[in-house]
Every structure is written in structure tokens, then in C-alpha cells.
Image 1 (cartoon, rainbow, N blue to C red):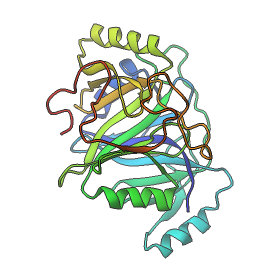
Image 2 (cartoon, rainbow, N blue to C red):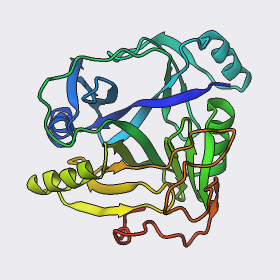
Image 3 (cartoon, helix red, strand yellow):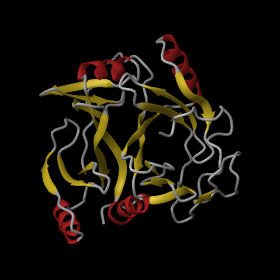
Image 4 (cartoon, rainbow, N blue to C red):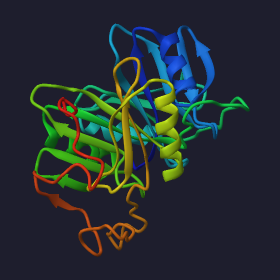
Length: 295
């Protein structure tokens, strides 16, 4: 089994790479660290690769890069995948932050790029925009949630943090409450949103004012989620993709103990992974999500 440790980056297709580079550098506050054959590579202010942009007919997520332990034997992993009937390819990465990658497809059709080593990339000294610490999680609509959950558990080592009834799951690969979210949504398969972590509540407040100053309206928030308990804001970028900025996500600091780091607002003490009712609200405060947010 592969033991994923963290999410590294996503690859997005976009009809206008230059326009999206403008958004991600000037609004979100990532640093452009390279261009290659019409592709753009962006990193956080700490120098960790977070995003790859490439030309496509529509805005969509095509790949996700996950980091594994440095001593991972990719040849053994490839054999294990082959035993599961999954075809994989070992190749040199085409992104500047990673070396060798093992690529294969998950059940919803997203290409996964597994890498073991990452180098920090040089970034501009002066960055503008929100300036997130990292890419925190990605959320997808899927057709068959049980198949996707089984794949991520069995083959990638993800753990279930919480279910909302049987149609919405939060999964973790490290201490963060979730690194991937999956929602069963009829025949729709697509990226719902990407989420970037900022340092604290003060940075959320600054992001709200910065977005307002750029005439970018929040579509939900500020608020505090109930499942995961993070403070959040959501807006749409110029490709109409939903972008979340958050802070204060629940932490599973010790898997053997099996509960999330205590917080004053937890419903259960200690708060353990569980199945929440379908009518669980999206937030304690900050209002309900807008009509169409889940589509």
C-alpha cells in the first residue's frame, strides 16, 4: 500500500493560462516559479510547489500530486498496483519541484502523481495577494463514493475523518482533518473547490478586505464549519472555480489515540471520527451556503 503523507499540488486546465497566472499571483498570492511549453508553475511564499496551469478547453482539475516517504520503493509500489489491475508509469516529473513520479489513475479519472522528494523553489521577495501557507485540500463530486473511498483507503493509506450521512466524506493522510473531500452527486464528476490554508483569523480578515478591494465578492463566509471546525471564506476565481481560504482546521495529532485535538466548540469531548446527520449545518456562524454552492 502507498502511504501518502501530504498533498503537494494540483494541475488545472484553463482556457486562458495567462489570465489565471494573473489571478493566482495577484489575488491568491502564489509565486510564478516557471514556464514550460505553455504551462505555468506556481508555489507558495515558502517555496513549495502548489499549482500547475496548462491550456485546456475548460477549467478542470486533471492531476493531483501527493508526497510519500523518501524511502518509498516505486518499483514495489508499481507491482502492487499491477496486482490490483492498475496500470502505472514511472517517469521523470515535468514540474520543477519534484523528481521521479509514479503516475496512475484513480476511479474518478484523475491522474495521481506520487512523488517522494521535493525541493523548495526560489520565489519573489515581494509577493502580493492573500499569500497562503499551503494547498490544504481538494473536493470533488463523484458518481460512486464508496468505490472512491475504498481506493483512497486501500491503496493510498487515507483514513476517514468524518462522514455526513453516506454521501459526503472527509479523508486525511496526515494530521489535517481532511486532504480530500468527496460528495456523491449523481452523474457529475468534477472538482468542487480547492482550499488554501492561511496562518490565522487575522489573515482571513485581511483576505476579506483584499478581495473586496479587488471587487471579488465572497460567496460564503466568513464562517466556521461544524465538520472540521475551520474558519473559512469562499470566492470564485476568474475561471469560476471555487477557492476556499481557511484556518484552524481540526488536527489528528495521534492516530493511536484516535481523537482530534480538543477545541472548545467540539460537540463531543473528545471528538472522534463519526457519521454526522444529513441535516448537519454547514457552519456554526457565517450563514448558510448560497443556492447552487453544492452544484
